Length: 162
Ligand SMILES: [Zn+2]
Image 1 (cartoon, rainbow, N blue to C red):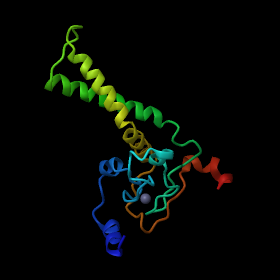
Image 2 (cartoon, rainbow, N blue to C red):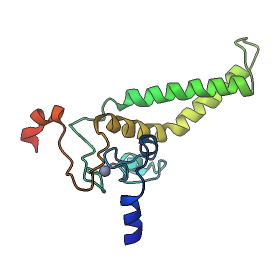
Image 3 (cartoon, helix red, strand yellow):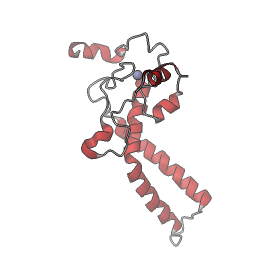
Image 4 (spheres, rainbow, N blue to C red):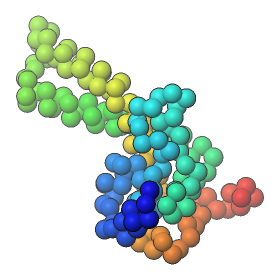
């Protein structure tokens, strides 16, 4: 990466919350990647889920406590449900379906939806971590000058661990 490129990243207009979450960026600076690989389908050795300990741009820790991402399976489940609702509505509008057992279109939707859910799982899993972290770490417009602080709610418990 050239120096010019790096400057672009630091001084360009602040990316929106949504764009930072969707692109798996650190919620504090919205610029640094939280995952080491940008390939969601690098499934070897679980490479697609490997995260930086700290944001490579602003230093924000990506794991705020032990087992921090434990709850993300629920988030990923919720994303799957929302996705299924969306494909169901889209299918109903575009292709049409009834709940009549003779109407195979309902089953085609089910099959297509299950296949998509499986295919998109790596993206959903990464997205759920990105979302999760963004609920605990807020954007700091002074990320370039201020050091990342430890989160109050974890501070007391973690004091001895640091
Ligand atoms: Zn950052």
